[in-house]
Image (cartoon, rainbow, N blue to C red; front, side, top):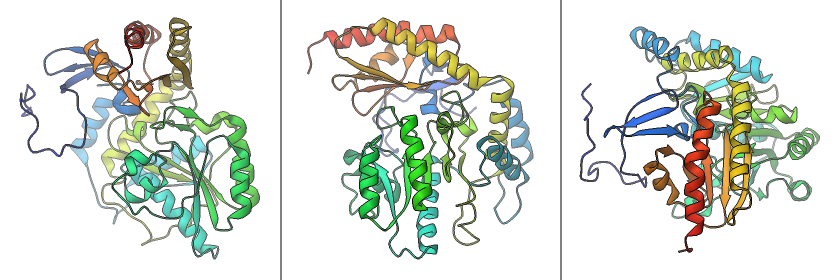
Length: 404
């Protein structure tokens, strides 16, 4: 109630300048729509970057969180948190895995996965364990997750990076097998099933199966980063399930709490007991409010059939974009699955972020040339058609301009 109604006219003088912000501040939302403090309405094709699974002000989520806030927001992990077990059991049931560590963010989940792999290696007698990572990957901005990330731009200025992350191209089985043959210190493979920040680059089903087979043969951990592509976004609970495999370690976050910060590392039998008391911990992770958000998010998703909706509406959105952009020079590829789609253009298109906002559409541009759409999973086919109607003219107009 005490928040300012208007954005100050001057730049934020006390906030670190770490984001290239648009001159917009959001006030409230409803469903797949949000309004800014000036009253302008936007169709949310970004979902808080794949976070707002249930959209905004969902009528089942809001009262549940209000009830929890009135009971208990936070308690230390010195004590049992019954909602942790409730959410963990559900995640294990959905994934076929066995144990969960809760944290608050995707970065923390990925950092925990790296620690699990390192300790797994040490427990096997590997003095300098190494984790295979990928070109164009993004796992976070801590020093370790930044080192695992495959983007020199975000790494620049933060060296020396952490060692122990040999890198290969995505979907290249021979490159991974060649590395396996020459590096005895590998203990895990760490990959996104669909690279998000790297440009919506999916791992193929065949590649995922081949990596699972190689990890089994070598005794490595298969660690699948589902921070952005998990929690129903592709039409299954987890994107790797399209390949019919199971990972040993699966970091989650973003959509798990529908906007309340929740991170998790879900582990199978090979990795579930690697960490013991004192090996890892968190202050905020797994607190009652976060766990209630996770429990209710999964419950509502199931009740409302949002996996099927993501698959159906995502297919309609992709088909609409393909139809309207067919033959347009400068459109390189439209790719992705479910409600995680990327439109790659032939040149950098960051300015479309602002142009789309002016047109009443929220989206992002990642990897310089890829328009990313990750809307709430409640998106309707009519709203998907509206995204197409708003976005296609912007793309055509941009590509018709001379390259700068």
